[in-house]
Length: 140
Image (cartoon, rainbow, N blue to C red; front, side, top):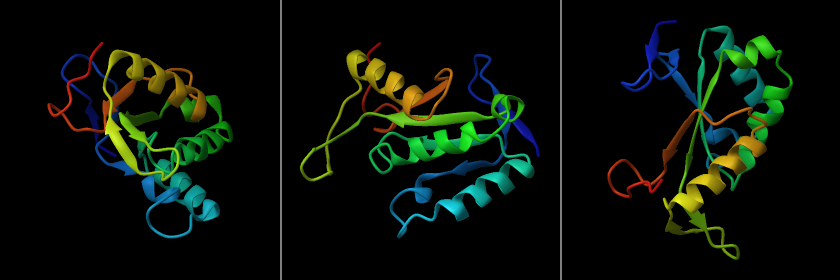
């Protein structure tokens, strides 16, 4: 698998093809964990090292699922992966619908810490605003 460096300031090297994981927890029918595990296992066997998720996918369910899958991998397998997650979509507790985009420094810190905890990561290396680049400037 070809590799690419993320960003222009020494970001991690990742596979040229990444795997978007949203459909493993939400949006495309009833989630099938067994099929999702097979997909993740096969993708990593083929050299995929970039896995994409977001705290909004199933309101954390996707990060939780990836965390369970990661805990079943060896340290060497985990160390070769980059989990890219997105933040910023605030949901209405009653309806589950997105009610606001929040890229304030307070929410960035809270979202990053929550993603690290939810996905069982040791650190948060790749974090992006779900609001899209330039639309909602991140406040650090």
